[in-house]
Image (cartoon, rainbow, N blue to C red):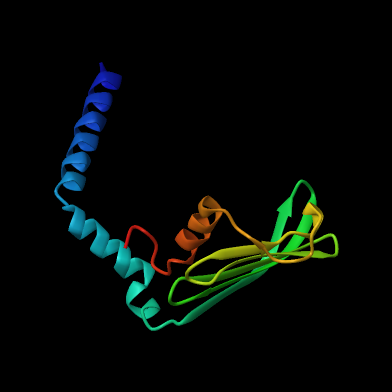
Length: 127
């Protein structure tokens, strides 16, 4: 009987929490998200540069990720002494992928360009 009362009290508590969470409108949730994320400060940024290392299948790959306003992006990844580059200049994309057999820039397909265009969006699609 004691377990039943504790279980019932827990269920009532959780149902009350759900009601509180449901009282927020979408605009309120998004406003809190933007506040916590620091979006107001980001509006002044013109360029964002990320540099780091990625670990994949036991290998470490240094990368550089550059985003500029106006929907531009450049991604560089050093893989075993060769550099892969992907670029979207705001209108079209191109890449250099040495292990594909060419060290010259190659135009990207529409789908590849769309992926980079989406990544180049500073605030993201939610904003």
